[in-house]
Image (cartoon, helix red, strand yellow):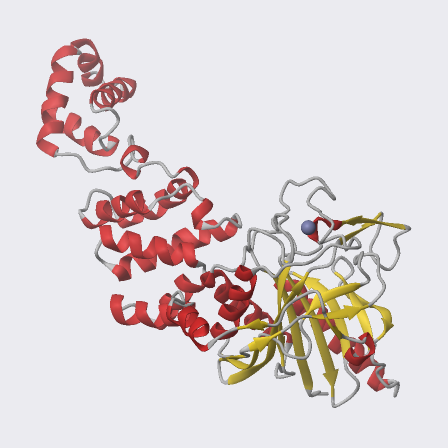
Amino acid sequence: MTSEVMIGIETHVQLNTKSKMFCSDPSDQKDAEPNSNTCPICLGMPGSKPKVNKVAVKYGVLVGLALNCSINKRVFFSRKAYFYPDLSKNFQITQYEVPIAVNGKVQLGTNTIRIRRVHIEEDPAKLIYSGGDITNSKGVLIDYNRAGVPLAEIVTEPDFKSPKEVRSFLERLSSILEYLGVYDSTREMSLRVDANISINGGERVEVKNITGFENVEKALSYEIVRQNGLARMNVSVQRETRHFDAEMRTTKSLRKKEYEDDYGYIFDPDLPMVNLGEDYVLNIKSSMPELPEQMARRFEAEYNINEYYAGVIVYAGKDMAKFFEDTVKLHNNPQIVANWLINYVLKSLNWRSERISNSKIRPDSFAEFLDMIKNGEITERYAKELIKKYVDTGESPKSLISGGAKKVDKSELIKIVASIIDSNSEAVAQFRSGRLEALQFLIGQVLNKTQKQADPKEIKEIIESSLK
Ligand SMILES: [Zn+2]
């Protein structure tokens, strides 16, 4: 049975500003003791006054522009009222009536994903469910460090036709955000997804707070199976909010879904109207960094590499793209650089889930490696063996191959062999009487003399022909 699937998603992205959305507490909570980065503003104490973080507003505009949205020139903040322990004020400051950006689009293959809106808001506190998850734990701990961290919420229209498509979109989106420099993918829970899914025009079900692209795909795939199962039993799907259990790979009902209007949004009287003038937006537009799609096209044109290579390098991350360009400056053959990066280096890194910027290899040593292949100092076959060790250690390839198959100057080697034969008459006599250990000993002497820079096979041949 084929079913018509409609999926729309809301993505919450933590913006990597220095301070929180409405106060001056740091927004990065790495290594911070729970509840240590808080103040009367983000705890919502009586009498405290929030102030708008201008960098967060600018980031919101950047995200909107990068997703081809129009920017609203006058925006304001509203209070979304609800009672829950993750909000000490009993409301979240967000944008509802007039978001910072609207009506964008992202092209995903042949499918256009429309972006309904992008707005900025504050993150609620983090709830830690002790001894279980939201559906079965006996208690909950609250860490208000996260309360007030700026978020961009990106809402799409229900344009996705499959869970796989959602995953590709999220990979694309996180890449765009990274290139914009507004998001740090290494922060815990820095990108969270709520997905709405309906099948064959039925009620839509929301799966909330999924982290990890793979989990989003799994959660949605599970929902399709579950909703199709209900349809087969003639049970209609209920409009509700569900939670994804990553371990069990199932979704569980949390509550019947409320409607947005139920929240009773009101204009926040503590915060001013924000005017984003024409010049302000144009300025941001003109200083926008190169985005992955543009960069991939530039790589194809400038370096004459194919679309696939350009895409893999660019979407592997900004650091990988920079590594590629830096290496090409030193080893001027982009196709070779791309080939070795994609087929060997990237595979090694992916295997260890490591990014190139955190690895030990550098463009200069990588270029040295490629130079050595080009100059015939090492064979391509040997280089393929060596590259894993190089990525592991980051050591200069020249020092890595000592004792290996490096080609050294042959006339030099003949001289060294001759001097070793002269000064080891006993071993030479033993070799002549047929003792193979003597040959090994002589090879070892030559190797030592060359600081293990010569090929043992070549040494053996020279010794044998010298002692014929
Ligand atoms: Zn604060």
